Length: 289
Ligand SMILES: [Mg+2]
Image (cartoon, rainbow, N blue to C red; front, side, top):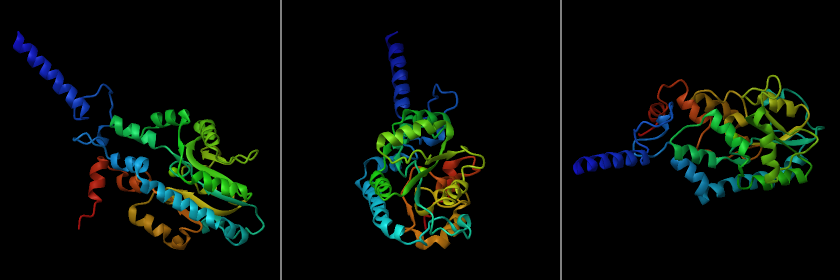
């Protein structure tokens, strides 16, 4: 009897230990996205999320990018030929007479959703539309270091700031609330937050929204954390993505400004698209010699 009790206690303790370790124990969730959690209780995104949340190196990088962009605003404003829209999206349109704007992405460009990413790491899960929508509704994204200063520097010069985001139209009120609470300029009455599917033809590729802005504004700069924040065709395989940006090589750091996002993006889906096992697909892309 006593012995049996010990066995039972041992079994319970092992079960608890396995759960705490994020191991292979069956979870109550009927469809857990288990692939994100490794056998040792780690997660594909542990380092990446910690880097964005704790590394002085991350803050130094984003502040440096935004400071460089801010320092060029006056020169960009003064040069009537200075325009940051990709050639195919601008066409032959003259821009010198148009008022000035900058186009910025929202997530991991102006606002920091790393708390959401941290929750995924803690839970051993992956991104899912329902948990993301709930996070958006919380309105708790922070400002990326340096983003506010840049946006305000633009607004102070009369430059319109357009937030072109792949958050959806349903999450727009929460997104606007969140941006406003953080102090980002929203140039009302004009609607400067352009979400996905808000108008016909506004898909996840942002080109149609960039053109919507570009028809009425000279676009001085674009800021993002994803190739898709700058040009379409970004959902291509790795080598094609590199070729896509080749013609714009000299624009980085003057018309185009890229922020680091090691936690997710089209760089990652370029590796995992169509794969049964995304982790295996990523491991195959490693270069070890
Ligand atoms: Mg983004």
